[in-house]
Length: 457
Image (cartoon, rainbow, N blue to C red):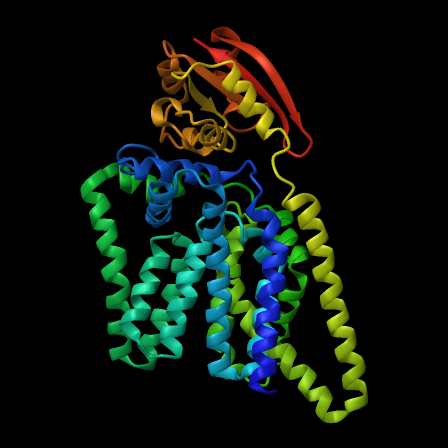
């Protein structure tokens, strides 16, 4: 394959990917990303996470968002560009890594498998923080495996670690494997990682002390083990079946030794997901670039073997494989545009109603998936600076639900609740709303369900 054709195909892959994800850039939806957006705004105003408000993740994501609020205010489009640019960057460095290690054809196959997997396309426009961790992880791996810039690689691994802790699983595997290859590499790589990871942890331990230790670490251990949801795991496989099929093709790979590290990283991570109390779709993104590289190489090898044996059958099978891939891509795109990127149907209505029924001093409180978004849209503050009202925050003792609700008394608060989800599932919340608040209105969203708007004085 000539360089010109290869570069044209790379450009085509990225253009198609951006075209698919474009609708999601302009789509506001309820979800955890709104919590992080609002917290990013708070950091831009001088708040310190953990010390001034509860935050259940490592800090880097908020400090990437804060400058955006400083420069542009609440600019939804620019905030949405962060995960999209992160995903594109991940794809680019995945391609560079695969090309240098395995050649252009396998690199293109790996890139296509990664970018056109359903979960990659969906999560590319949602700021869950995992997209930053994946980007730093793959950039770090490029400097580690291709450029042999070990300290720089370690620094990027450290950035991944302080973006989302799940990235530490592959980082530990990579650093550990470097020890058996060459001890000097291990010490340089690990020193770069620890310089960032320990350095940042020390800063926030100094700033927030035990609050940081609890929020970033102990909180996740206290969530409580639930029965593993097989259906959630199987749903990820079903949505990304081509990627998982490609990864499973490792058993037919000719280059098992060269693909061994990527396979181990992917397999260990997938096993770790099976052992977790609960998994979400975006958790798997950490493993996807490594799985895509294995799958791309294996599928390319299988097709090459067929071509060497029979060019006639190769053309037929190639057309079939491309047809299946394009059919799956079209199906995923249609679903994303119809449902995944549908948006918050009643968001503007709720915002306008709250503005109409409130004064400039009125505070918002309630459902963590929606209140931060409405607060940003309406220019309102969230009462008590309690942005994250996920039930786990109260179940773990990070906050006390009764004391939190008690503190709301005496303030003019609009309480936005979902029917039986989130903070509304607590009997204390329902009792508080029934006794201390007046129901102003309800809004039914076709995707998100029923929202109830209360005024509490």
